[in-house]
Image (cartoon, rainbow, N blue to C red; front, side, top):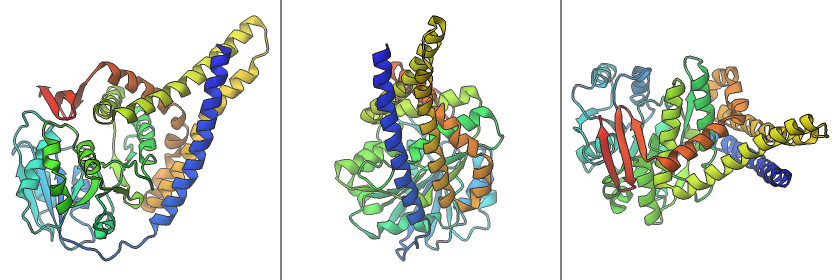
Length: 397
């Protein structure tokens, strides 16, 4: 057991040091991109946002989507039912918008995710005059410069898509919401200046010609994940995905303990089905991290019982969460560069993304095991079984 502990702790210390270096690289990327000009590429944009229910903060989120500093865009809000309570909120908030707003009723899906079905219906309503498709989520609250910055890199016609990611801001101050935010944060810094990026459905821009050439609608058939399926389509066509950290989306999120487990399990189960290699590597990392800490503490307690020296075991185990918190500090510093208008809240809640970073891997390990034994998820009131990337069964609504 002692040999196993030393193996795990050395591997994790080396991984932690690498993560700190990678965190510095990401911080420099954020600093470099935060002040960049959005450029002059300004195509006509169709902005798609699927909605369901009158979620907290929806009015402000819809207002943000209708208020970008960008002239040539129209918004397509899509929903499964004409009676969705979000519809009245959208109609009220966008009544005075200078941008045309379309409300698309997609109906209930049969063999795919409701979000995918809503997006497909909205895209079919977009006329040929739109040059770029942009996808957003209804729980995000992007700033006024978000749309021009996300679209600008597409001036390079060889680029497949531009994507960003979310940053959770807990609203009620509850512990479980804070833990969900800490759990979510590392995914943002997985994206960067490399060829391993994936599209995120809450903030992706793609030229219409590439969307159609890649047959994205076909990849969406039977899918519950719009973004992973879009990623697969682009990779099959060897089109690169560029990450735009300057477009990180502030996202309002609150949950209780049950909601935390449901959300995190859903994300990792989807990842297992659509990106199994990423799921396996993430799970292995969580297992090594948690295993080294638990084993170190256990060996230290055993040394106390036996009256043998063992403080060095505890100190080695403590290094791992310290390194994790150090990466959290770098991550927080980068987000403050990217979201200066949120700096006060980021500082006030800084403990979330620093101290809780040390325990978030334990949730990740739980999610990994959940994904190993189940393919079922709940999402916005619908119960799905994910049979494969192109086959989804709806179990209940």
